[in-house]
Image (cartoon, rainbow, N blue to C red):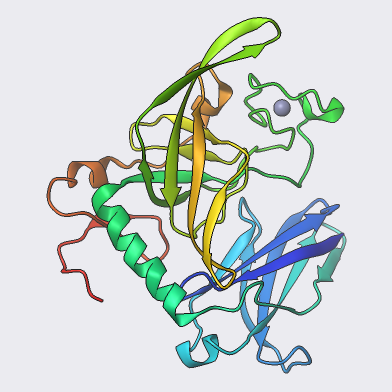
Length: 282
Ligand SMILES: [Zn+2]
């Protein structure tokens, strides 16, 4: 078992996100332990131990904003306990993938406020790229979009726990694509969101109407000295008979109902959205 490709993303002013990949996960109860230091040599502070579950990231809200614009190091350990043994592996110390810039963090905040006015709430489903293969269709790489175990990704579960956020969409653009000699219509829209979550091609977006959109290759990232603050991309509408419509999506009902009032506010753990009646602070 190996914890690798740890990414430390300081994309917000109030927290740092730590992501990881794990190779050859041993069977059993997997627990992730995240440690932090201001030096790659330590001493290390153990922040938390959480079940691996359906996540590939941890958010560190305990940062001190004055440290934040300097540098922090993180280590990620995965421990798997079975009936007889415990196996574990810890990653090398990893620091920020990009150095945060105050002006860019400020820009993110402003774009978030803008999205609450011009955009709509949505869920981002980050596609799994590692993990146990799909027992139904993934072994031969012949994943199909009818499989409701991997949803065509070839990896069991298909996607991580959905992440709540906001998107803005342009008008519908209908094109046609020839596939196996058959012309099929494709509805696509240009969309944008802030720097979070960082998206990749084939990730999924479920909009406020429950429509599934697959992100097309070629995400355009707007940045300030390499620090991303906005992502512009094309979403291709997924036909309604696709297996991804069987994915369970948290309800946006409360937020949508409050839309006329003012906007939405996200709670810290992003499990809930609540109406926001406060004035935008700057
Ligand atoms: Zn499958």
